Image 1 (cartoon, rainbow, N blue to C red):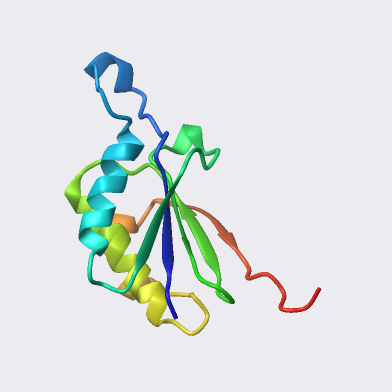
Image 2: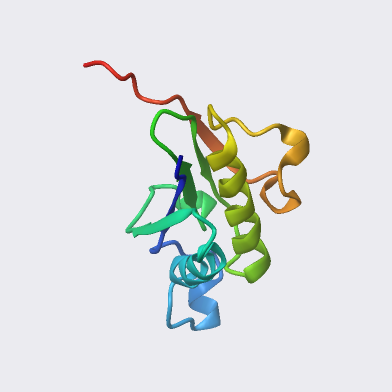
Length: 123
């Protein structure tokens, strides 16, 4: 089943203004994730604000019927983007969305903010 990476494209790290950046850190990270996810089977989408400003840059990994995860405190760099995509691929391969810790890419360790159970199938 497909896993989605939802990327907050409005995230700004604390030093954003001091760097005089023309793009938000979230936009830079989103572009890197989209590139890393191309042809992997993992889908991406952008959203404006995941409301985790103190944890920026933020992403969510989700799939229907599976555990969902919010992660933050990423840098807008290729290494972090690749770790996020690698984790999302493992999430997609998992029946429940739970990925054993021993298989987590090093780049996502310490970045988990929340875990959400899947929504019930019935109303």
